[in-house]
Image (cartoon, rainbow, N blue to C red; front, side):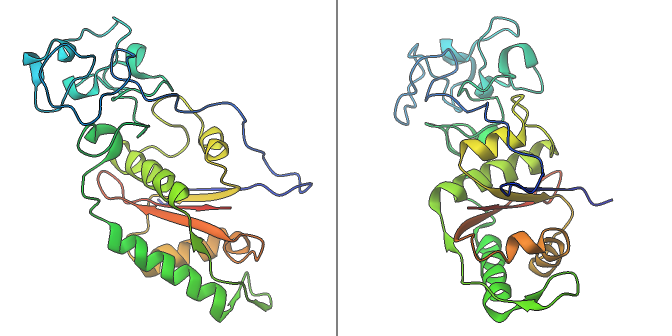
Length: 240
């Protein structure tokens, strides 16, 4: 069964607004210290490199000690008391500042990103639907200018797509943050997430079937899509 969450935020229309709370916090390591730049040293520097394991004192952790160390296997799923937090730590499920697919694969997914071409194809298909004209719900054909890819929204879309794929989540993030709060934090006025479509054609059909008016809105000028495949096969569209 397809699971799709569609959120539209339009002034005065009576739809659900974004929760203004939430955020990923600052760039800190597993013990709350500032993340070093791509360090791989297996020493007590406040960071647990993926390759160190128990050889690094920072990789030695116990669930319940208030320290979330994702590279030691402590995550928002395995230790909610330490890792279910919006503080930027490896293991909370959100790819925050100072993290990438090399330093924290649990939060950020693989590096390099495997699904980049799928994202390019879906973004192009969305823009083709806008510029060529699309009828929403059997109404008149409408047209809209092509969207511009926004790098910040792109990183956010990949963040949500990987978490939905890897942890099979759609309504709330593993760190306890609502998707509404996260969308607000990245200044996305509209977003759609689905965990069923697996091809460009299916993803576009799903978007136009569930959030066509948003996709075709001429007031939306920038956007990004994120796609990932693991336990689920989600796509994410963020619009502004």
